Image (cartoon, rainbow, N blue to C red; front, side):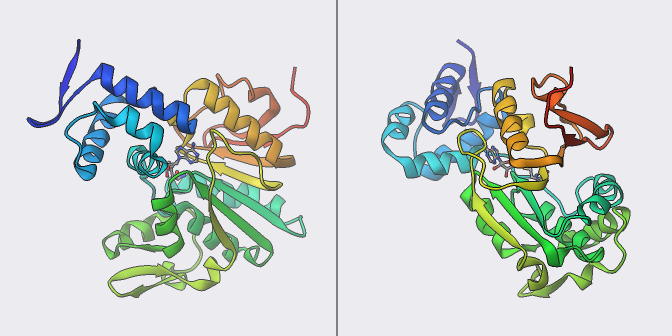
Length: 284
Ligand SMILES: C[S@@+](CC[C@H](N)C(=O)[O-])C[C@H]1O[C@@H](n2cnc3c(N)ncnc32)[C@H](O)[C@@H]1O
């Protein structure tokens, strides 16, 4: 049996890790079985330490009976890295290729699925404001993880990131100053209310929950990379159902629809920035 020694005090075997992930999958629909194993093991170790558990032995049974513990485990296992104007060229492509079409609608609904701590969402709100579309936009931002949603709602980031974010903002085609949209408050940089007013944050699990509105643009970036093919297909079908005809759909730079059975339900608008458009009928 392969043994992964995480620390002297906590040893996690592959078999036990599989068992925990399998219970988690059956209880939540969240499939971490195909996550990179070293990262899962590191996060499990953090979880055990936080919960005061000596090893994984009792965890499957505890998960069966304790929904709050299950939520805490999901919150520990999910990867949350994000940035303001992450992949600035992607945001520039949205600004140049998508926003002019969205401008033709009387109201615009946007969904950020897997929004993490909200930086992607605030980036979109800033861009919409700069082209005078924010006033008619409603932005729904969802994540499975309730901890990151709380942080997203606060809408703040560390001042240490400010110069990096300013560079991203400019590369993304930002027209003003980042300080037009955020200000220092109590040692943090806080997004202004003018952005916040158009955004609502909700918990939503792409592996289990249904569509909740009709959208003109859906972003699901750097989320499905952690899903197996079946789950990717489920989520993509959900996005397809949730888009207006010819609505836009964007995924992360390292993600692909190539092996997704839903690929024929979208046309590619910009292959390098992974921007697609819904077609009502599957292409042959
Ligand atoms: C790496 S972050 C991506 C954040 C942002 N979209 C970006 O690209 O910067 C991935 C997010 O997906 C969320 N996530 C993972 N599985 C999910 C699921 N089944 N339903 C909804 N969100 C999920 C995680 O909690 C995490 O916050």
